[in-house]
Image 1 (cartoon, rainbow, N blue to C red):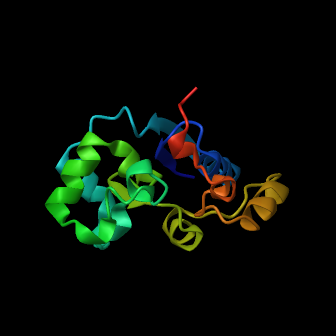
Image 2: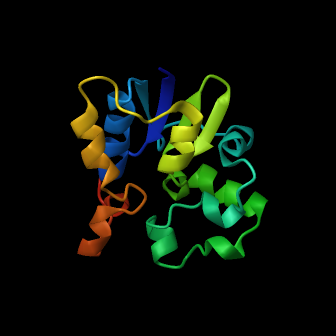
Length: 152
């Protein structure tokens, strides 16, 4: 069991399912609003690791969808400047367990890191969540993502 700090956008359908899976695997999840967190360059870089800069971006953010920001066209410093001004641009979730950090919810990577096998009594929940693509916004089929909606 891990204590997971989970940076999310409140109302994000997939972030809700990802937290549910972590809890069903026996982890304790502490939710944080990614949009209200006071980020610094140094803090963000801890989550990005060796990923290419373009992979740091939330592809459903309005500035990306409108092509105002083209992730493949910005360098490291420009990306950090943009994300500090507009945290909706950060691909989520950001996860922290003790001193280790991860960006995104790749089931294989999270499982290898802290484990995603169900705790006793949560087998059905995890079985259902395994069938879903938790990396693709389900709202995109409706031509809008939760990133374009107001937080309630």
